[in-house]
Structures are given as structure tokens and as C-alpha cells.
Image 1 (cartoon, rainbow, N blue to C red):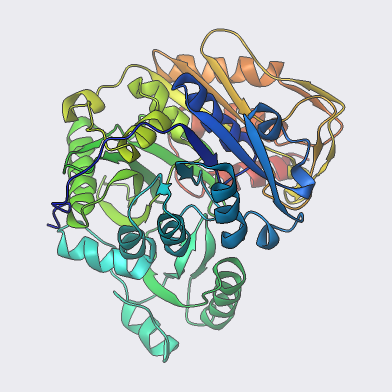
Image 2: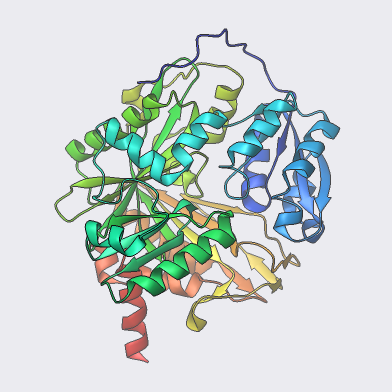
Amino acid sequence: MTKPETKTITVKKFNKVLIANRGEIALRIIRTLREMDIKSVAVYSQADKFSAHVKAADEAVCIGPASSKDSYLNIDAVVAAARLSGADAVHPGYGFLSENARFAQAVIDAGIIFIGPRPEAILKLGEKSRARELAIKSGVPVIPGSDCVVEKNHLQAARKVGFPLMIKATMGGGGRGMRPAMSEADFPKALDTATAEAQAAFGDGRVYFERLVLNPRHIEVQLAADNYGNVVAFAERDCSMQRKNQKLIEESPSPFVDKKTREALCAAAIRLAQAVGYSGVGTVEFLMDESRKFYFMEVNTRLQVEHPVTELVSGFDLVRIQIEIAQGQKLSITRGRALQINCHAVEHRINAEDYTKNFLPCPGAVAEWVPSGGIGVRVDTHVYPGYTIPSFYDSLIAKLIVWAPTRGQALKRSARAMGEFTVRGVDTTIPFHKLILNDADFAAGRMNTGLVEKILKKHENKK
């Protein structure tokens, strides 16, 4: 186990934090900063000049043109904005540079605190094949696979793993650079597609292989770790409702995971975090088969899109925890308290997409925007009436999160809230979420990572 560094840790309250992100997550971070009496600095591209996060921040700095590579992925521009604004720290949000060790180091080299794990931890856990090796050493179950990056003799390595298998980008995330190969005949095309996508998304086309677990659930464990060696794990999230490795619905706790399995999942996640002396928040993702046997998949060294369901179930503000850890404070949460389950929470990702046209992105002007409300409903969004959704970024426009004492009540609340949510001017995935909520398998908790595609096929067959 890697122990935290023995250097003296200074506790320093931040006066100003720059958010190196955009949209709903930037706005969500700004709200916590305001509650903590910390000033916020927004960065924005030319396309985001009128975004809600820009209006909400205490200060805002334009960092470049619309293209992500020239703005939100431009390390020099973001660090220069942090210096110019006099920020004490930088919060990366999720996506963009949030898991980029070079960015974290550049922030630190500028004399600014990075709100996240140390660069070396990002490197060890962010590179998927290295994280897998670390999991094996930590006694965390892993799916049989290549155990390292495969840079040559790809077919020979694949044969050793066996088919069906999953090709995974070494520096992957968000489902990008992943392709299944059900047989040797499928392998060449799947490999070409995965490596090309990985190169385009991460600038690194390297891959490794894992045996494909059929009909799995995607289960993940949220962690928080301070700089003093304290680590806690929260109740699991079930993220099985996904399409092409992109999550659509997440919930906590999982309707499939029992207490004994929950404790084993959390213990495994904590061991992995302790092995690298992790600090900050992060998520350990697992695949679980039909017998509740679970396997390590990857670590996300950042805040997750679906973090609100954990916040609602646990009662803790994860962004506040991130900031407190970065300020040098000790965790005030015990392991037992972190695992307490106060309700059932479900998050629906609402995207500006037309699901009837293969989820085609639908940027454009929002003519009407009436989000849901009422007891047990939270909407995280940066959209407002008259806002123009740009075509340059992810199509996520809102997260509808509901909570209730039981899963059944939460799903009824989801249906009620989804019926209230009104958007005109652009197509959204709200109609597809209504289809899911009416599906008997989903209602009964019989989910796996292939259920969304089954629902789509059933709908197509009814036409």
C-alpha cells in the first residue's frame, strides 16, 4: 500500500477558484463555491459567451475559439486564465482536462492548487492497463485479459485472451475507444475502429484486451480520500442503462446489489485507492455478472456526471468534499456513515438528440424551457429559454434527478417529472426516457448493459 507523503499539509481556505469546464457542471460547482464563500472564475469559449455558467460566475475569462482543442482543451490558455484571475485553485469538473496528468502538473507548476488527485495518481489509475495491473496487485478481481498494452501481434494476443473479447483504449473513458469482437472474423474491423477512435479522442491509439462478460451490469463505487490516509466509499451506483457505452440512466443503490456484495465492492475500491495514496474524489467502476461476481473495469480520477445520485442517497455535497480535501482538511465522514442509504435516487441524462434518428445531435435555439419541479426533484442544467445549444460540445443539456424512500416510488416520481419537463425548439431524449420508464424489465430492476438496445428494438418492432 502506498502511504500519503509525510510532508506537512497546510490547511488553506481558498478565496477564488477557477472552473476549467463549461455548462451544467461549471454551474453546479459555482453554486457550492458560493455556499462556501469562495469566489468563482468561469472560463468560456467564444461559442459559450452567453452560457449560464458565464453569467453566474463572479468573473469570466474567454480562453479561445469554439473548438475544444483551442479552448477547453488548451492547457496553456486555461492556466493563463487562472494566473490572470489570481485563482488559488482550479477545479476541472468532468471531461475535457479533468483526467489529464499534464494539466494537473501545469496547474501545480504555476503555483496553483489542483482540486483533484496528484498527477502521479492520475497517471497510475488513468491509464487503463496500468490501473488493471495495480488492481491485480491489490487483490481486486479483474476480467481475464491481456494484462498490458498490446502494441503488436494483436491477433495473437487476442487469441490468447479468447473470444468474445472487448478492445479497450489504454487512455479511454466515456465509452470511447471500446469495441467488442464476438469472433476472430470481427476482430480486424473492431480493432481498426477502436484504435482510430482512441487516437482521435485521446491522442493515444494504444489498446488492450479483456474477455467479454455477457449480460453484465455496470456498477461503480464513489470514493473520497483525504491527504492523511483516510478513505471512504459510498453506496454503489448502477449505471447499466447505457447505449454504446454511453450512460443514460444511473441510480443508487443498485436494485441488484445486496449488503454483502456492497461491502465487498467498497472494500475492493478502498484497497485500490490506498495502493496509490489517492486523495480527492474518484470512482472505481466494475462489471458484475449474473451471479453477482464483480470485476474491476477502470478508475475515473474525477467527479462523475452521475455524482448527484450519490449526493442524494448519502446526504453529502461531493464538490464541497473535493474542495475541503484540496484545502488540506481531513475527511469528517466515517466509513459507516458514508455507506448509509437515506433514499433511492435516479438520474436521467437529457440530451439534445433525436432518438428516432440514431440519437442524432440536435443543436439550436431553445424556444421554450420548463424544467420539472416539486418534491424530490432536482434539475442540473445550464439551459434557459432563448439559449442556443452549440454544436461543438457534448449534447448533454440537463440531468433530471429524483429521489424517494423506495425505488418504486422514485420511478413513479421520474415518470411524473418527465411528463412535466417541456422543451421546444430542439429535439431531446425525454421521449426515450419515457419509453424506458414504461419498460417492464427496467421497472423490475432486470437491467444489464444491453437492455437499452432491447428497448429500442421493441419500439422499432411496434412501428
